[in-house]
Length: 344
Image (cartoon, rainbow, N blue to C red; front, side, top):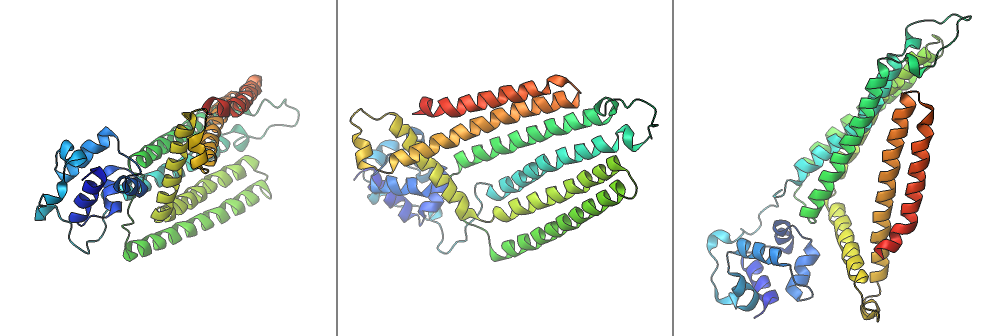
C-alpha cells in the first residue's frame, strides 16, 4: 500500500467527501484528487495535518497499510449530513462586503463634506472683490477630504489583504447555503437596491434644484455626493452580498489561480529541453496568465499610490500635484514592460 491508497481508504472509511477533506486541509478539491490518484504528493506540513485529521502515524500513512485499521465510529461522518460553514466563509464575505462598500462610500461622503463646508456655500462674493483660490478657502473641508481618501485606501488594502489570505487558506469551500438562506439574502439585497435607487434619484433631484433655480452650486454638489455615497454603498454592498452565495464561482476562480501559479513556478524551473512543456501544452498559457495577473496588480498599486499623493497635493493647492502623477505613470509603464521578463 502507498500513500494514495491509504489516503483514499482513510477518507472513504470515514464517509468523507473530497470537498470536505479539502476544506479541512485548506486546499482545492483537485489537489485531493491528485493525491489520491498518485499524480501529486503533498508537502510535509500537509502530511502532518493529514495525520492529525485521521489520527494516524506519518510513517504508516506514507508507507504502511492503513486498510486493516478499524475506524472509531465517532470519526465517521453521518450519511446525509448537511454541509456546514467550517471555515467561516459567510462571516468573511459579509465583512468583505462592508469593507469594500465603505471604501467607496467614505470618499464620496468626504467630497460631500468638502463642498458642504466650502465658503462658496456660505457667503456671496461681491463682483468687485478679487476671488481667492477655491481650495485655499476650504479650511474645514480639506482635512475631511484627505482623511476620507486615506480611509478609502486603508479599507481597500485591508479588504484585499484579508480576502487574499482567506483564499490562500481555504481555496475550496463546499456550498452550505440552504434555500431559506438564499431567499433571505435575496430579500435583503432587494431592499438595499431599492434604497440605492431612491438615494440616487434624490441625489439628482437635489443637485438639480440647488444648482439650478437656487444658484447654489456647492450645495448641489454636496447633496449629489452625500446621497450618491448612500446609493453607491447600498449598491456595492448588495452586489457583494449576492455574489457571496455563488460558492461555485469562488471555487472556480481559486482553482484557476492555483493552476496558473503552479504552471508559472514549474515553467520558470524548466530545463533547456522543455520536455515538460511538450508533455503539458497548457502550461505556457497558464504561466503567462499568472504573470499578467501579477503585473497588472503591481501597476494598479503604483498608479493608486501616486494618484493619491497627487490628489493630496492638489487638495493643498500645490502646483506640483502633476509630478506624482507623471512619476507613477512612468513607473507603472516600466513595471508593465519589465516585470514579465523578470518572472519568465
